[in-house]
Length: 98
Image (cartoon, rainbow, N blue to C red; front, side, top):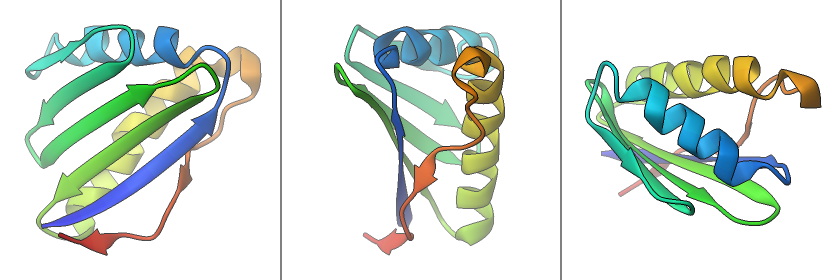
């Protein structure tokens, strides 16, 4: 499995994380509290963490195609939720093995 972490600097991290989890829960298993969230996508799981200044997403998958799909799903939904902040995409680090 490979992992990739994305970061979005925002004072509204908890709000966006809860919106993401609530939205995704209509289609896949998803749960969260104010600071941690988990989403079980068909292509691999995502773990979300909200701090006072940042939303972090870690996606895991069997290959780069799964990570690409995870990035696209998270970024496209955040684009809708965080439009007031001019969000375009998370700052995604390079994938890592493990």
